[in-house]
Image (tube, rainbow, N blue to C red; front, top):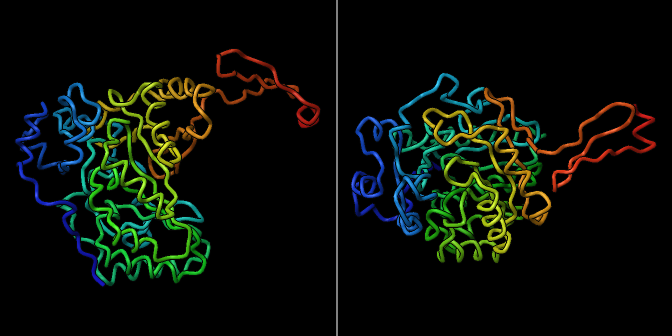
Length: 356
């Protein structure tokens, strides 16, 4: 079955240039030609000010800074291409793969690490032969425990298309977990109807859905209702956020988001340091600053609300945690540990001394 990219919402009533200008962004032809732009009505509803002040607008509204490319920035910052054995599959880690059936999204984030690979210019989905080859790869590699559907956004698939994919994955015995990475429930919740949920739930395997959300302001009534619907359907919900300068680079802002999410049965999973994607330097803060922000969450925010702060090593070498305040070995079996109030302590035990 050939996958077809379908509109996720009714056609936009406004031309992108109209709402970009209204929200204080830049609609320069060179900018709009280079990177895809789409903002749904749901997202527009959550924007309260212009791009210079609003944390949601900053995520979606184009700005001229995007045409500034720094030497360290890369077209493929996390090295997807390096780990692509067949089209649509990224096999970076031994027991899991990314499966990318489509390259379009409901909305286009201005800091996206795949911004050079998604959008209308890359709209052609996997054809039938490519789809079969990708799923054959999964079936033929018995070490694959988890398949992560990403893209693009996998929830732009129609229920019929989703059923085809889920049935095929359900028949692969060694795959035990199916995970979705998606913005749709946050940016286009009307699309998540009973038919689509039933298509996802056609499998008896464990299904997880990692929702991309960066600020509590994105949680309007429609989004909240959508998340409750997904939870009620038995789908395990996680969140992924990106630490973005001027959007959520503040411990109180993150704490508010994570408490709201946990109350909606969404477990905060990852907080990503921004990737070195082209034209995104205005979103990046230092790794040191990121660790300072995350350190402020420790001890002041329930452990259930704590995501893992991660950085993707440029070039395709994988993610590593950047957890602050990890124990520092001082020798002779002694470690220095900093608590959540900033006080340092010495930790040692007989086992540590014997290992020294």
